[in-house]
Image (cartoon, one colour):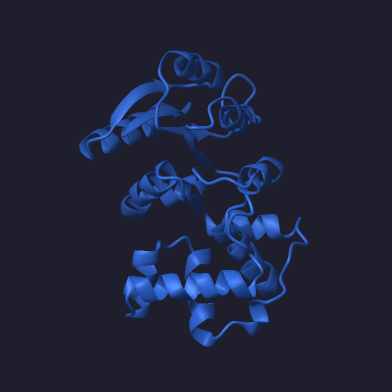
Length: 217
C-alpha cells in the first residue's frame, strides 16, 4: 500500500514511517504540515493519507481541513485522521458524508499497534475506523434515527455493539463464537430493522453504529 503521512511531531511521524515500512507498505511522502501534504499529493497520489488535525503554522485545524479537501479533490484516496482532540464539526463531516475510506483515531490508540494497522487496512479498503470516543462525542450534537434498535434480538444487539467498537466481521465472529457468514446475516437483519436500505448512497454500517449510540446515550 502507498501511504502519505502528515504529522508535525518528528518522533511520531518517523515511528509511523518505520512501522509501516516493517509491514511492507511504501511511504511516498512524510511531511510536517498540511501545505506540504497537498503539494505531495499533486505529485504522488497514494492509496491512503494519514494526517494530524493540528499542524503548523497555527496548530488549529490545518490537518483536518486538508483531510476534507482531499476527500473532495482526491476521492480515490482514503483518509485516516490522527488527533489528540475531537474536532466535532469536522469529524462529523468526515463521518456523515456517506462514503467509506475514512477514519478518525485518537493518538493514544496508536499504542495499540495491531489495532492501528488493522484500521489502516480497513480504511484503505473502503471501510471506516472511528474511535468509539470520537463517535460518542459526536452523538451530543446529533438527533439521528434510533428507531428499530429496541427491536433487535440479544445476539443482534451484541453484534451491533461490537460494530460500534470498530470490530470487523471476522473479529465479531471470533468474539461471539459464530461463523462469519452468521455475522453477515445478523448485520443484514440489523440494517433491515433499522430501515437502512442498500443502495441509498450512505454508509449503512456507520449509520447503524450511530443509531446504536443514539439509543444508548
